[in-house]
View 1 (cartoon, rainbow, N blue to C red):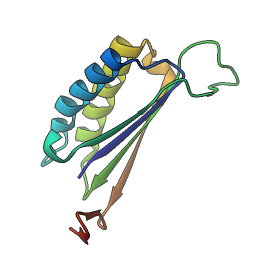
View 2: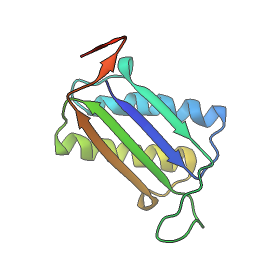
View 3: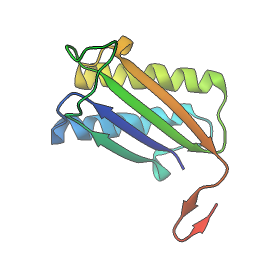
Length: 114
């Protein structure tokens, strides 16, 4: 049950949204036991965001929420891939992108808990 939420200063048109969504669907496979089959993606573009006190170049904040746990190596690999995707698709330099992981053992779906 992964959820990836991307907020960025950049505009995300339909073509970019489709590309980012598809690539994140492949990237989630880097976390053991996770797949695009249950992945939910939220993309928020044109956000007013500041990094290091300025907004002069593109920035992004990405939150990856996961039911269960994932090891540090898998999270590191996914972070690298997310930064690559956002750089190639949205022009966000990896040194202007944060990726936050949130793990939980309580996750609801379809009217109940897993």
